[in-house]
Length: 282
Image 1 (cartoon, one colour):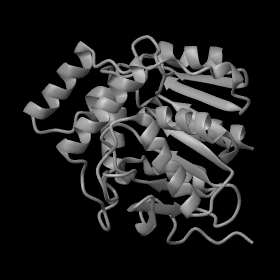
Image 2: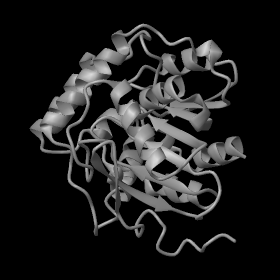
Image 3: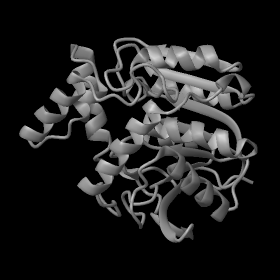
Image 4: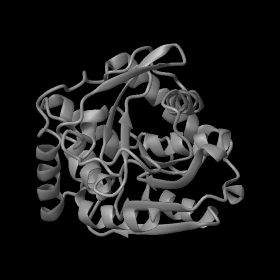
């Protein structure tokens, strides 16, 4: 019997904590209480409050959804690792502490790197994989902080504004409107929010991202899991070409590219993305 979702939505699910691998991990549990969970792995600098509630609640209408902060991030303790592989080890420890497995993984950006490292380490822990706004280890342009990213980040810092509207969305009228709507949505939750990512832990993530881009590529051709790869058509953070590369190299992949959208295309087109994810996971 599926529990009603009252108290288990993106705005109402309480922040819980569990100990694993020597630290306490903060997490939230949404939607039904049974079935194979979909575990979200989030992007560079993000905390659990940065997930789009329309994506969480859209998927949680059908599936149990778990979001969590990795070591040193948001409400979790410890210091952020400086490699994607160590982040994957922490995620695996978290999943085992909750006695979860197999799970479906939804990795966005840096979270997509972590999802791939989890597949490399513990393939039996995962049933299906959703990779959004991300790229393969050692891929062209992956892990590089290009001029557009640097200028947008600096512009956000100088104006004391969150750079996500510049980094995640196109500068077309549609993109700007989508950016405003997304920022309003992630501000809807006002209670039980977690702390922002500190400069020290951001620096560790930057190192991890750079190392992922510089490491030897994984042999993605041996990955047997079904994978949904999704992105916007103009991603300025992880080149959209990387999504094509993933879909080409993964033998059981489906590709979705959303129009007039960037790195946050899955948030801009959240209705289409949620429908695509639920159809894929079914």
